[in-house]
Image (cartoon, rainbow, N blue to C red; front, side, top):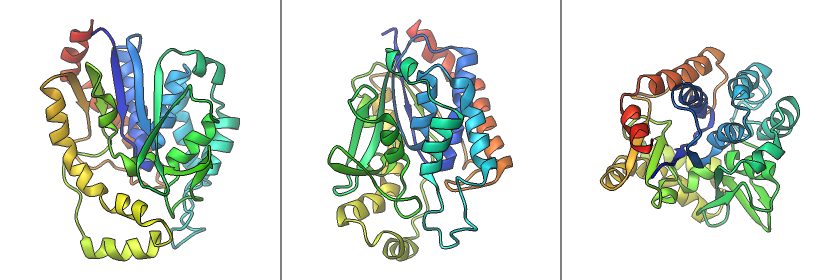
Length: 286
């Protein structure tokens, strides 16, 4: 009962919210009793730097990404295809400019599980940081958005996409935990249905993907709506706390506005620092 886990929701650029959350948690409570993290998409990259002991690099990486003008390039690809340069994120930012300390990362006993989505079946798959695969390829696949990035990422004989597609929260991974800190990047409100518009987008953007993957993407809004009920079921038996914006974050999933990035990180920080329930959550752990 004296350890806790973090589950971090993905979502493209809005996962910058986690940068503020990590900063505030470090200042208020520290991470000595953190033993496990489950995350997908950009959140997986954020928490990788927490595990490696380089959390001071998280915000600079986000800021450099936006300022570089090379990560999101809507003017270069006006129809949206390949507008996100995941290869730049992984190969340039995470390996060269802000190299992840892999020895420290691997030696840290904190477990890190990263979600990806099988490109053929549309189902969620989670890999551990200790699995014998190239960790950068795992991160690349967890951030790879169909149509909007360079494409699926293949390793171990399978191909994968963004982990948020197969599991919008990852909550199903932590039912065995007693103390769960849930960090969500979406507010507790339903997504607009826009069925007709989504049907058009489905044909335009993902018609070349498998039917199973299309169905997984199509069902994501419904899965988002199920999160509050799932949290309440967990709350009946577990010690949990939820850090979550009350309204949509200033930044979009695909965005280039530096001021909105700064506001999103600050909101993650403020929401965590002002979260009254965290005192009770961590009090039950100590």
